[in-house]
Image (tube, rainbow, N blue to C red; front, side, top):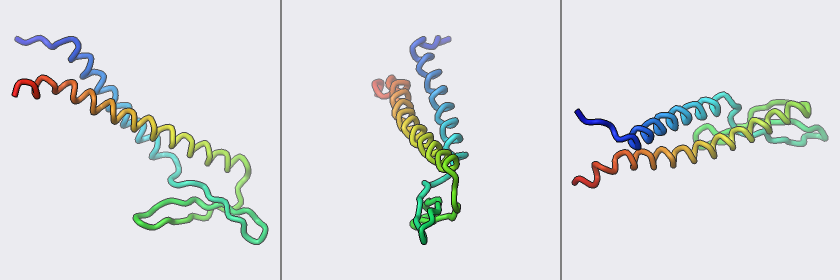
Length: 110
């Protein structure tokens, strides 16, 4: 009966945690509004549109005149999305590293 190397156990546990966290970050991004808020000045009035991609095209969804609080909410959502994307990028690198570390023994034995 083979016993698991303690370091290997810690690495596999960290890999599971990283994959779980990656899933959680992706779910958090999914609930945030897609695209970015774009102000357009039309006949002296300031109107807002939500710009987002659909395939190769950029679509603008009319949001109307928004209060300062609503604009701040959209900007905060954009900041959160950017933060999550950075965390996801770091997690992907960490997952690749952990997978390589866990499979290192297989590569050496060939």
